[in-house]
Length: 295
Image 1 (tube, rainbow, N blue to C red):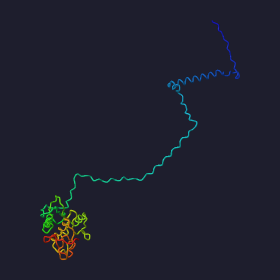
Image 2 (cartoon, one colour; image 1 turned 180 degrees about the horizontal axis):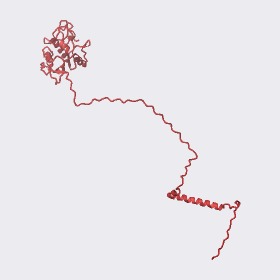
Image 3 (cartoon, rainbow, N blue to C red; image 1 turned 180 degrees about the vertical axis):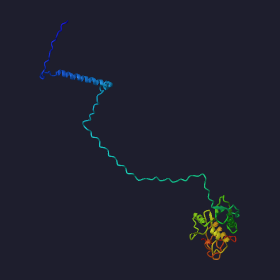
Image 4 (cartoon, helix red, strand yellow; image 1 turned 90 degrees about the horizontal axis):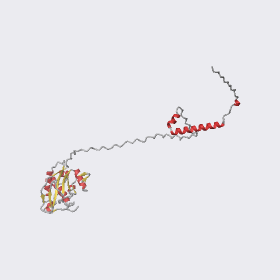
């Protein structure tokens, strides 16, 4: 058997606190340097490798965000503008209705005048003056009957053709007249005469006849009824009316009664009174031109 060698057991005696060794300053400084260097290595590694930084920081709580120690006062809140008061309500002006156009023309009103047919020429010498004969619709006179009356007067040898210095020709509606003989109602007669500056009213009533421009206007009231106290038949008065107004168109002016009991000149205003003369329808008597003093 091998001999058993027994080693002595050493027992360390307790060291009093006062005898404990103090930390070596050199070692402490070296430790700090090593720790700082290790930190720099880890920082460089984190900047170059995001994955390493993530791995190294895994499991750590996020660093707290430290607010700036100096508080910056925020801008005061802007005041909320008060709601604008509603203005007056303006209603849109409705557009006027425009009548729709129709392709069918409305019926034309009836023509206000009816014209007589063309007739012969009266007189033997002198210039020819053309005239038309027309009757206003609604009168109880036909154009043919009125034309017969006018023609019968103007072709009489005591009428204006007796001077052998004028001829008169009746034409129809479509010709080019020098003048027109109109048989018109009192209102229309007043309008036609007023267009030429002639007033035919007596006490506000259209009473007489006239010549206005190229219009020889015969008032239907006088043509159908004559005048009171004329002292002759209606036919005589009608002949006077026609010769008197055509005479104006031929250039003759008003004349006066030459003497009591004498024939009234045809250019005297016999409708308004004879002034002592006798009714007369003709400008020529006994083959001579019969006149009175100028009015």
